[in-house]
Length: 205
Image (tube, rainbow, N blue to C red; front, side, top):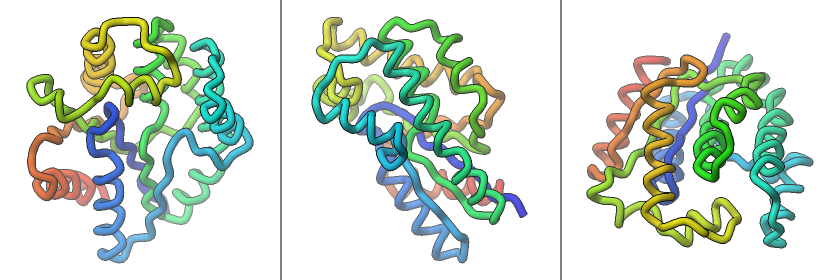
């Protein structure tokens, strides 16, 4: 029996955590075995290194940070494989795509970032929780981006916000590993968004 692997991606404050929980709770009510994870994981050896680096506000160059994030996911693969072998639904809040988008927004080569994440299991479904530009005041805040990236922001606010959002939309339009992406407008009512997500998942289960 094979499970299903679902990833939620998107900018800071786009509603990922809310909808990961809502989907997991609903699937459990339907009798499904569900496990939720997030990245960075913070509970692997590599994840603990990342947590320490962030807690101490250490400045790592983007290449080193990217490889640490990728290594954290690699160290988690056996757990994900086992859950999927059991037929469970695995839902992750962020995956390799955040590494690709955020680090390429800082200037790293996108293809290099795609290549270092190639060995890991890819999701069956990727939900891009999108905040359209006209409602951007409800989404990313510059301080949140800086905290997430652990950097001192040097570029104009709108420039970084645009690069991040456009980076995710570009991956959704041209999936790097041929995954199934769904762009979800999170400015709609929460319950409406939840039903849209649930309908897509039920088609795959």
